[in-house]
Image (cartoon, rainbow, N blue to C red):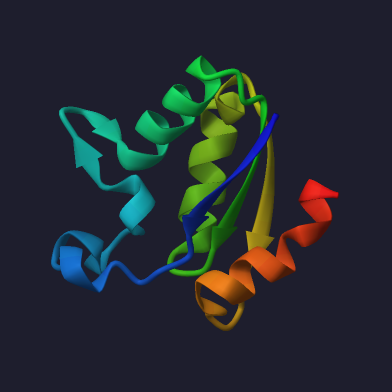
Length: 97
């Protein structure tokens, strides 16, 4: 089973927390939002994930590498220009075919 995590946004509503990191790497109780999401997806049997990134994209990629992709197959869909939700999904269509 496959899933997509929409993580390309600027996280403006979480400022100042997102001034130096993407929203996906904001921590709650010592765990990042990305870790919480991936762990829950894995618990539901999802083994393959695509994550769209834009704001501080390299931090997300480095975080995933340092955590060995949390034992999942993870693809990255980099958005040099924000594509919004519909555009992000359209760009990632190949992953679901």
